[in-house]
Length: 167
Image (tube, rainbow, N blue to C red; front, side, top):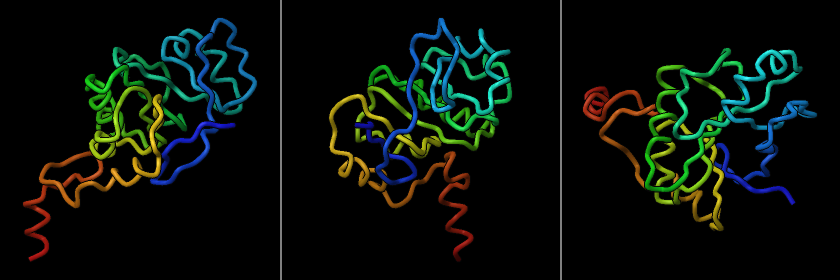
């Protein structure tokens, strides 16, 4: 039975598979996710494939270390080791704002439901929990707040400027 994730504000089956053992990079399908170190060490073999695999970034990884064209990827997964580790928020924001990544940006790991709204503001559009959670309830938490004062990846204009344009 496939795992369920939240993707683009709906609950769907996860079509991707995380490959942790990358000693044999002979990937049978493009629907796999490989860590940054494996990507960089097997770059020549990967770019010859019909479709590129997804990229896994751990919180200690730097997106600047990625070898290749980051915009050519369909999926980037940022792993959160614990809900108290906020580095993944920064990575998501960097990918959207500095690197202009437009593909699916997925948070996975130890984050909690209460963080979904803030992850969404940092540019994440898919969420894969590693703990048992009611996904229907989590889906509602993406809209916990109606508006924000600050700018973000999803709202580039601050509230005071948006208010001026309404008057």
